[in-house]
Length: 326
Ligand SMILES: Nc1ncnc2c1ncn2[C@@H]1O[C@H](COP(=O)(O)OP(=O)(O)OP(=O)(O)O)[C@@H](O)[C@H]1O
Ligand SMILES: [Mg+2]
Image (cartoon, rainbow, N blue to C red):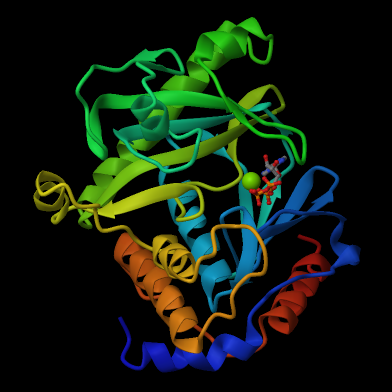
């Protein structure tokens, strides 16, 4: 990591990308973290610096958008032989141009560990007595954060805005007519192959891929990986070399990225409801530092961090991209 990185992060605090309003780019759809602009057969995904936790947008974190976007690109570039993906170009560190696809109506979660804290997570369900999760049998006597015998595919339905996603078995996805049996099979195989690839690469960097979520679409009848892949927003990563020892002692694994801010918020009594606490500068800097160090560790290179207004740089880069007729 570069010397003075924390100073660079602190200098960027006033310049983060919290929102965009590029109506000239296409039809806008705003997620919690990303702004999507659809323009015919392609889409511009702007990864903002917004951080979401407990299902709320908490605060902009310096360089977070760039980190997530570059990480997704890193994985897209390396997994093309497993499955096609939507990436076309990266006109700016915070933007990706992608092929517009017909999204499949499910999210594909792959899990390698018995963990999680939300009501729908596999550990919560197990603790409450469930011994089948999304069609997978689970042995008695397992404990929190234990590895599953092998990674499992646990699809969830995509609820309409405001609704709650539902975890179901692959059979149930087919039974509800959401996917054909053949497509469900293909999606499961591809997801497990992506997960295996990700786990092996991360293991070399002392990380565990705990669980992750993939989204797929169809483009000209072909299966295409869309959305993002193996980013801290779609995945959980644990530190590998301390895992065994901590697990044996019944301690929580060392987690990276968002967990730090989540725990800070929880220590202030915030768990998603009510007013978001004011976040001190040093907590913002530490959060950004953790995102950056994780990304650099995974990608094996330093990121080119430019202190300055992201919005104006982004707009200039996007306008140039369009004017070049690309
Ligand atoms: N190439 C693509 N073609 C079509 N749709 C896509 C493509 N890539 C991503 N999408 C869809 O665009 C939407 C992006 O939304 P986004 O992830 O930003 O917000 P969200 O899913 O509504 O909420 P959250 O912020 O909780 O993720 C998702 O529904 C995703 O499936
Ligand atoms: Mg999403």
